[in-house]
Length: 456
Image (cartoon, rainbow, N blue to C red):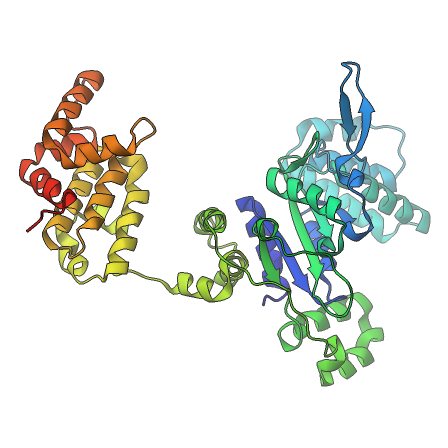
């Protein structure tokens, strides 16, 4: 389970990775407030849709006959458009508070649009709001609501998804999967965030389709002691001394804060090939910006994709040798460690090396290291099937069939012929894995025996 600050990080981490988070929690726990605050903190728009109150047309739009004689769908007005920059949004908010006749200064600001412009506008808006009349503040809030879909970056919040009608769920499915529904396309700077309540005493729909659940990163908002401090801080900041007695009473016994109703998802998060691909995207973002996201947010996102136990195992997994080490240092330097690996560790290292080297296999030094690794497997690995799989994976490309790959590995003469054709075609020598393999006659001969099961 994740606390409030961790969930905020998870929302941003998933957004950067192109993954849709699904926030689970007790009713009234503050899920929508967390999403809204995340949007406010990052100056993002937010469109809040309660799926239990929607029809599919509220997402897909209503049909209209076009001039081409075909049916077209008109997207709802509240769906995100994303056609205004931050400066343009700030200018409109400024004008809503201070109705000025001369727009020349603001027009110049829109034209310049730099960080200084944003800072100046934010300061002016804040100063005016502090002394604004009730009517001016009302105009500001009205304009802010009106502009939400037009923010360049934002969150489309789909709440109560597990209480939506089946046809609405199908529209959500398309929106989450393709970032579009019908003829509507979500703007590039926007992300989808979903939420739902636990099954705790009220009816929910059949929210248990594995193919649908698999599209989300499921994150659970914790309650009780773990979020008490954050709740106290929020109540004190929002309501001041008027919340003092409430905070004192509720914090005396956390059961008074959230009640004793047990909640459950109604399903378990299981890994799939799709979810592992999302893990790769997420880890890529995490690795590129480790100072922004802490490890707890990474683990919570992993747990939401592949299950908690597997997420913990994956986050703790460490092989004595990494593919990067082999590429950078060479096989010989890590030979002793490689010999001591278990079957599972060796398989993991081997496939990891394939993934690491596949896109760089035409680089001479990378190819040489991969051939050295194959040589090491032939000589020392107990399970020779690994070396065959390794070599086939590096030989395979879009134009190579499985039979052709096997033939190149098992038949040195055929491989030599392919190597000559490659060299004639590219005008270079030793640029591909099969070319390097053909140059190592003893290795290729041994590999041929292994392929045919005759390695004694």
